Length: 407
Ligand code: CTP
Image (cartoon, helix red, strand yellow):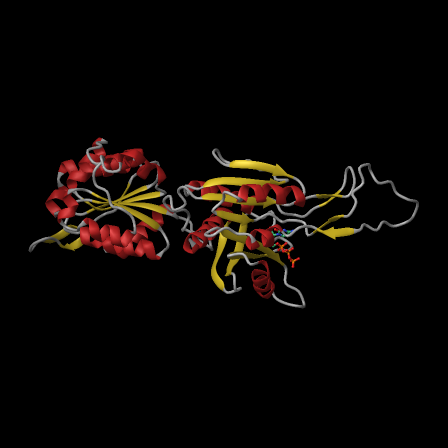
């Protein structure tokens, strides 16, 4: 999940570093926007080192990327910790005096605000009114903890412990966790400018004018990969084999039917691609001589079709890959007497020569057409490097994470 962490100018800003670390450990991609005042407490270098991203403060930094709007628009969740009394006033008034104020006005994501201040300030009628205003607008405002404050004072107003803040964050973004609870969905533009070609769906090999040999692939996983890659900044082209699903705006689409058409379309698109993902279920065999007219029954006689192998697109792409190009394959396996799903997958990884092979178990109610998926990713030597399960979009992001690690 893409989390925007706002840090405002209070002594408890150091605790936000621990909040950031906990969120990162959970796999979230966090961008920090500190206010200018907060930099008196914790410096920008800390935020940049811990988040792995720039930590801008000013609206006029990096103007071409329009980040004062983008940061808020792209966030899946926003967390402000600590939030000063002045920040609460600014937010309640809807003021965009700095980058954090702008981002908050531009976001539609859920917002968790964690105030920290002296007890007298927390009880001040202006602060009480501002908190009520924010809550009435749907902002989650965490109650401060009771305890030691700056100087000799103690009472309500202390920033809750980082674990409690992260717990409240979970409560906000994931109130009813699914068993798989995949929160790692999406990162900030880590595929900006990367060209990705994805094959999706299942090919159909004609038998005659009306019949074909096909498979059960729905195209959902390939399309989810396309949406996820686009969301992360990639330029995406999908070669879709018999997929009826729509694709989001800005994604290129080439529709094909047969393995031969898919091979041509993928090969052409792949010449310019940085990453090629072969998510399509491509027929291994086609009918040697498909009939141009409808085949008629011949009395009681059976029918024998002669099949010939199609070209292995993935192996061909892997053999001819350009320097730096990443080739990703899928392996739909059922497991059988000669080996388990993973054993077959590992053998296929070595045979095909792809940089990454995404193995999923298919069969009755598994893989094809279902909303969720469960995969293990193998490297070229057949060693497992990652696994993911959950909705196909979450699995798509996990596959892209593995691809980003290869770049
Ligand atoms: N693939 C391909 N061209 C083919 C067949 C498959 O490019 N003619 C690709 C698929 O898109 C997928 C990978 O190869 O990325 C593995 O597909 P799969 O059907 O699991 O493997 P097969 O090559 O058919 O191997 P086997 O028959 O041993 O299962």
